[in-house]
Image 1: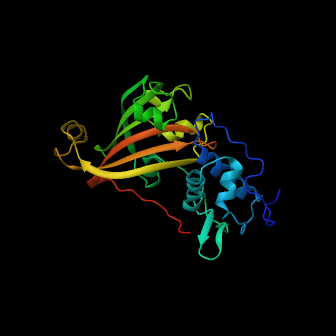
Image 2 (image 1 turned 90 degrees about the vertical axis):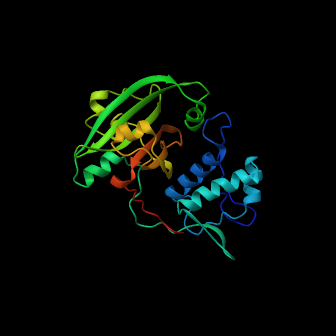
Image 3 (image 1 turned 30 degrees about the vertical axis):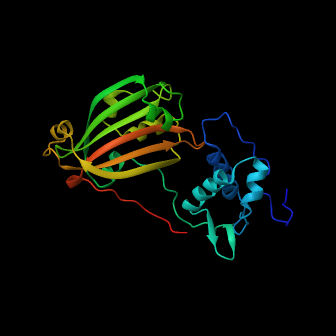
Length: 253
């Protein structure tokens, strides 16, 4: 199908599921991303008639803009004054995948050790339930771990997962990373969203991590998603700032 100006309709065939926990803007973004990956929307395809796209899907313009912003941030589409919004030229780069601190340490030829502090199912708090796209109070599996290198603690890791996704074993988690365990269960960790910050350590954290009370901790909140955009797990971690740093690769449109 083509639009009135002869441009392929980028959302032809898209059926939004308004009962799905996947947000509408993410469903639109996933459809367009799949079209770009398959070649249905080749480089140079115009996507700048946001009013028509929003109207054809029965969406508000802010929702449609949110989908477009997601694709811009991934480097899949580009916006240029005078040229509009178009599908970008793909780069021959390896696709970034969510990775764990365990994997990063092993790649750096270090031997991390892990102690599982707790592993149990229980009701999710409001923020965790919302992040995992679950009804309030839903049961989730919570795992808390202490990670160290050369005997020095570097991080306290707390993760919540949807119940029923996989069986977690405390002994196994002390010898491998959580993400490796998830992938071994056949779950594709396709994307992640994370927020990094810093704050002083609480007295409990300082004792656990072997630092002075009030010492600086790096904080990270991360939510990982499968290939369908469904949240798989949510983590809230703290790292000893003097013993850890974050490294990221960025693409600029």
